[in-house]
Amino acid sequence: METGKLYLIPTPIGNLGDITLRALEVLKTCDILFAEDTRTTGILLKHFQIKTNLRSFHAHNEHEKTEQIKQLIEEGKTIGLVSDAGSPGISDPGFLATRICAEHNLPFEALPGATAFVPALLESGFPCDKFVFEGFLPQKKGRQTRWEALAQEKRTIVLYESPYRVIKLLEEIKKYLGGERRVSASREISKKFHQTLRGTCDEIHTHFKKTTPKGEFVVVIEGKNEK
Image 1 (tube, rainbow, N blue to C red):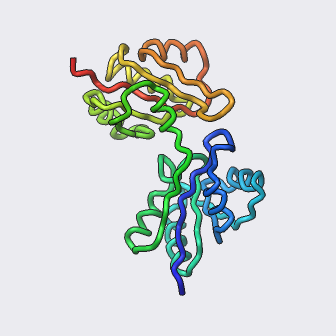
Image 2: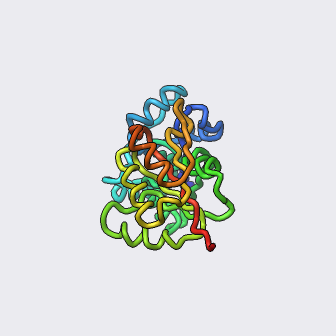
Image 3: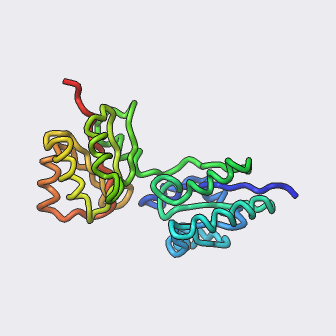
């Protein structure tokens, strides 16, 4: 029996036009599509009139589902994997599936497409020839250690944060990196109310103390200046 294949398929992070033609083609050919939230993905598939067998794949069941994906590929099935938005595996479930494919020499391919941190990095105006992507910092254990390391980082730093914790994040930047460190905060990327604010950490913090943060954030921090 011919071995199947796993495709990691990026989905829109805001505007539905973000999806690529190739992503649509692959979605149509998948025997089974694993999704972080089948309801969210179901809306996307309905919009593009795609009918595919949907199954869940999220943080609470990814170990079990990863084994299923391995077996299905070995049976010759074409499997797709999507997250709620953006590229699966980037601060979203997906890594375990790619790892098991690599370990068992099973075919898999990550399609290019929408990822929130790239436009946010470019819109920051900070150097992007070298940068460090941290995603979501650990909520408790190890968080202070990460900040202490990032305080010495000379490359541009990219973080993800929810609107409910972005003020806390800015306060931590002030504490560990200093209020004068320049920051860019992008929210609602590719959506109607997409906005990028640039300034010192103090300035951005003051803004969001007066204006309630809304939407998912990508916070980009200028690296430490040697001078």
